[in-house]
Length: 403
Image (cartoon, rainbow, N blue to C red; front, side, top):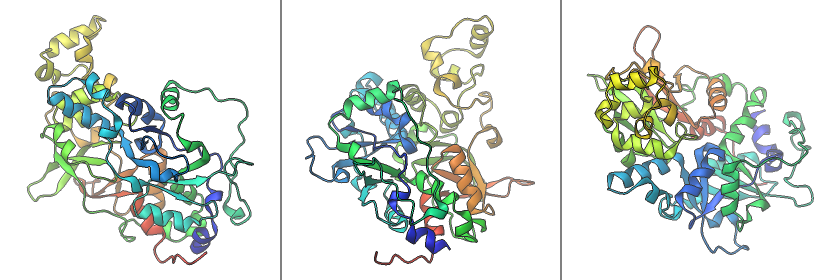
């Protein structure tokens, strides 16, 4: 049955109600891209080449995907070099985005699911499907009717948000309205509706399926958060904040990732990254804690007095608050808070693939950290599982045959 899912489902079966590719041109200021990221999937927005021919394939005009972590890291580095956040936000986005054009690929509406997943296994994060202009995004129910669920038809004119307005003002010359955009999250969401057809693979543990990436990027909890700037991996864009045991094993205390910074205040987060340790940046600073005293000279007693007497803290002190940045609060007086206080998304080596997929979709996460133990003993970080690992697991043994 698993072969039927991959060989009979087509791109047209997945594009009902899917949006166009969101993006900004290379000449747009970084602030425009940052404003578009919160409404973009997987915490990243496409950046396309200026002056591209409208006859050229759309995927060929995209120079890369800019993530929220890229924005925060660039602004923090600019500030450390003596610049201001305002100057950094005026930088052309083409000078900031990592140049990875293969992240966006194109397929025809009749391309099979297995072909789309092969492109994603090769590194594609967006797959574009050309629209049928007589019917909008193509919908083909016949080849895969048993597993197809039509999206409800929405009538009326949707109201555009402020971030969508900013993004649209920079994308008026982009031919993205000719395509529907599929993301890796869309594929996982489709697969989780086909668990019966994929059985028994979804019920097996990620360890037995080999779906755990043992290599991961990490920084020590006490290291400056700026160390992350030079360690950001290509996919997923996440760095673990760890405590190293005597035997060399790692306990995860937090993470610094594009997913965590997806809908945060990029400028405030960059200011915190330039000043704080990796752990304090990852977990946030309690508004009543003492840690900001070391960063901006405001004492813990003064901070508590301001809050208790309903006095609004200064803008600079608010930059370090969990409410301002959007991070989870922790006791700043603790040098190394317990990792159980943080909101790091983890799973176990014994977790089933279906459970991992459900957890990622529930949190719209690009990855989960994999730990071993944790009930009666300390949970040890052993790796991570992301989209690529899921696709490799579910397509194992499926051959890509000619159409």
